[in-house]
Length: 508
Image (tube, rainbow, N blue to C red; front, side, top):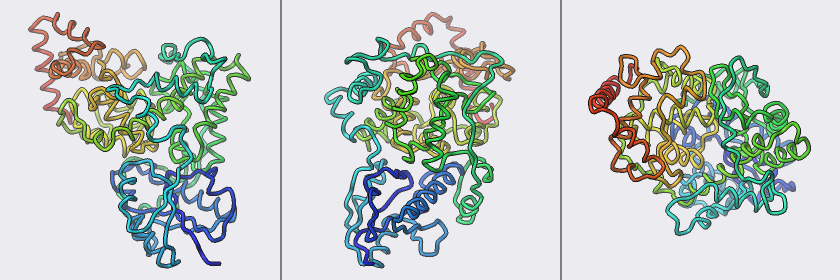
């Protein structure tokens, strides 16, 4: 049968509920491809590449099982041109097709790439997100600062989530204050169980293609969801086993476990194996059905991450790109320490958070924000370096959600678009939220001694060198009052110690 249309599916567009697949049309060819241009624009974690390729292959198989025509181009296929448009040009000539349909990509880089195509392309929506690309920009038109809470409340109302008669369930919108507890000592964690698959074939293909990657993998025990079925199963296991304590301990850090009570659904969400509204609805339904099991702070805290923060980050991305990717408010120029690629540092918090990231391609939001991101910000690392590291190392990192979190919230390189103050802290916060400081080589109470924690020293150095940019910020003015009250000799010792740390940064 003659082919009338080609439809391109990207590796993060694996949405079987898309309207494209409502009926089988033998004149339509669905195309998926593993290309080096997408595998090498940053150095990705090996588990990220394996996960995306494995999910794509499983999705292609599902489409074929449903009766759809599929052309799948693997990374080592001899006909692979290793670029989406190059491969599409070949396919259009092969099948004498004039136009190609594609789902709008989520990254600005790819959006521009497809707009410059020689092949006539027709774009359709990916039918995944709960907002349109320009919705956040429209909400905050004329405003310098975008307030997530304003957006979040509008989304709660729009989708009637945790609402009663136009008012939030429980009488308040946000229970974040209840969600900042440290895990009690000797906690027995009842977290979701891992469903492993053997991805040796995918891993071997990546090795044969000589793709440069970082991180570790055991391809026979790959533990990330690569099918919709496994993603839905993981969602329900999370609700049953981990959600009852998720909110309370979502910020807690521990060496005991690598994902604690977090859902591990972010990868499945970001490649669209599962939809945000179905996740939100399942969690909300659990609360209304069993309020004795699910306290409101646990449920609201989780829903806010998806209905609020995830959509908000995407909205800012499309409102501010491409200029956002070049913002460097503090003019930072330092490089990341070499141990960000090995975890080999005597700072226990950074050692554990980085090693965990290398081992599992994952760290939860406080590890990313207040350990690895905090240290890079205090050190004054160029935001380009930080972006590349985060985009590469985490399995759920795609630019639309990574760069606004990293360059915006974590590094304050945007000067306050995403957050109203820099998210920096001394060792006191890290000690408060976990067990990282226990047995560490450095003393979390010391600011300038031989074993002073670098977080403490660099914390004050950060405020001192950026005073002209931060002093008038009403949320952090108190820190300058504390700094000014210190004795001159003590301040000098701290600043000298900071310079010593920077000069020996690769040997901490």
